[in-house]
View 1: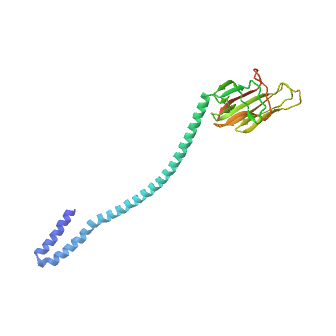
View 2 (view 1 turned 135 degrees about the horizontal axis):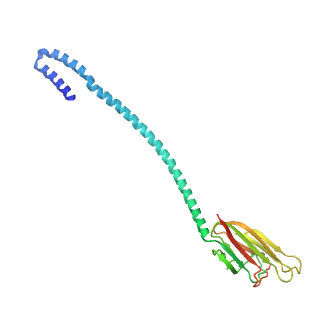
View 3 (view 1 turned 90 degrees about the horizontal axis):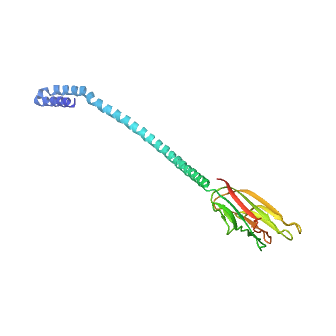
Length: 237
């Protein structure tokens, strides 16, 4: 189509150059032909302009959608990080539970000899270890140290002096805090008495539990192991 239009226009102008007498006639015919042919090249231009406008609008819509998608991806990314953190925490918790089931915790230790009086409050060192599953009890210090976070049961038994006036006061301690106590300081001649106390305690790793004897108090014991300290893990946390 473009070649045909070019040839027609060229013919019109060449004809005008060959015959001056027909110049006006040729010019008139050329003008009419150009007017008739104008829609043939104007229509594609108008169509192309309209198409470009639609394409521009589509591009704008795509940019808007991409911006919204980027915002949604940001939200999803934050949610993914939160879920990953929660997953890691739960995985660690499950691992701790599995480890605690694989390694139970329980101990019993006895005094086995008299102790006291001391000038100040003193941790009772039960150095006759009868059992120490999990290795949490240290006979050198008299302290049980938790490795597995959980809920534990502890108990101790106190036996007062064999002769004279009773003079025994003990307390179960957690990290320096008094939990429960036993007390026997009755009248002269009241001997051969025992007392027991116990507590269920929630511990985290590193917490220490021990038995404290008050200053200027005494305990009696021998190979019969009247004074004992015991504990075990009820369930992990």
